[in-house]
Length: 364
Image 1 (cartoon, rainbow, N blue to C red):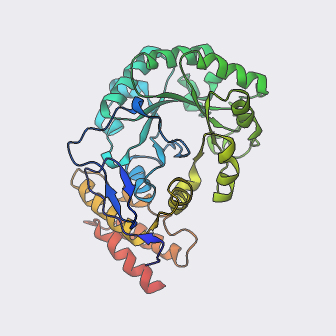
Image 2 (image 1 turned 90 degrees about the vertical axis):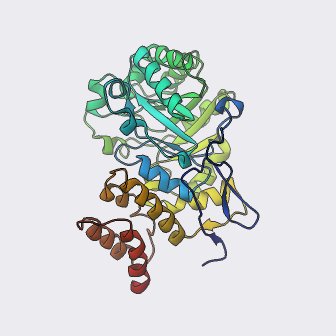
Image 3 (image 1 turned 180 degrees about the horizontal axis):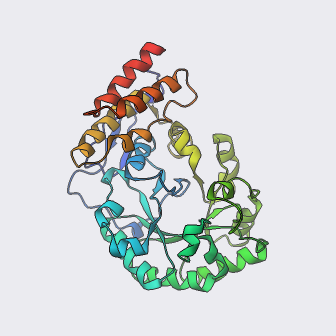
């Protein structure tokens, strides 16, 4: 074990974490302890992981929390319509260890969104966020996501309805523009209209979105990044909380932009290289703390997997989230291959994770 790494001892009832002087990870809250209202203190937004469809499900968030005690985690987008008619436990269920965790909603009907926000608050989410940045055709057909940037009054109505319904923070995640509506004046007007609904937290993906002609993946890569726009928004409106999202892939970038804004939000880089999140947490949010050992993370996650398998969650879905844990290290590809192959064996369980460590060590 490296001297700057530590073992993990999470429990199913863990609600929040702190690192002791010795570097051990301990639980602040025992089962049954009531957490204070989120309105009593603002959430730490310096480091967050973006909502990502097909990625940031409850299993992914649990793994990321083992690596980062402090980062604010976001769910995949859940539509208000789905919550009105779907399986609420499947859509909203999460482990208490995930706190602080925010629920991202999609929709444009103020009443449906207010109802969905209330359901999220009742489930214990620490924040409700509205998606005003996704450019996919499917999302546009439902009249939500990035296309709503052209209708700031509709967004304001939605935010007002949610704000009047819940006591947790209600926030917006948006782009800097859409199609040809991409100058600073357009973006600032959108923010000025929406903030009148009581919104003071804007998570800004610093690219515009093309509503036609680009896939969602291309919309994350092709439009150029303009970090100067959210920076200008923060400079001209210092009372707003502005979080930067888009294209952040390294600790150096985070350190460059974090001082100018209230927070940074990592997307797929945090999924593909989750140990980066641990390094940022220990380096920026809890200076002096020790990094968790990857082997300890695997063991803690294996315990979680055992528990989830008893609740009929699928092993393959849980295993795929851990594939990036050894990214960049020798033999990582062989380790990922072992997980993929063994995870599909009939009767396979959490022992696949534990055995994978032996495979990794032998290969090393």
